[in-house]
Length: 162
Image (tube, rainbow, N blue to C red; front, side, top):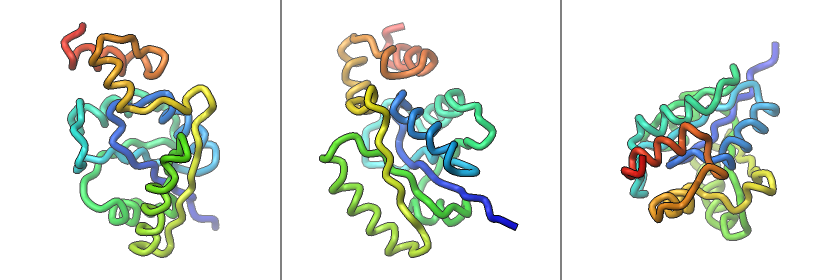
């Protein structure tokens, strides 16, 4: 009897972008289940509430082995509760690596059975980040090449550009 291979992809997803989608869909081909873990407790000043971010992420994915869950607290506790063995982290540029490397080390210290898998988004999404999407949208720019239609509409509504 083989055990399910479960991976957690954590983030604030404020908003969820095509880069996030790319990583999740590719990870879903590698694992039996991918849990998109939308972080609630964060130092970031988010545009969307946790509930809104979870809802947008749920609208984005319809594969049977992709699940979206909001969480707050320590990621390693959440990972253990989910029965996961892997955390997926996205790397867009070399500048991401140092911070992600430190996180991976800390996570392994907290939960030694855990592995971290670093994935890069496809080339067309290497420069896309949620913070840049928010900035472009705040300044009245078009973000439809970075996010899905439902996310674009939610951003416009939230910013009063609808």
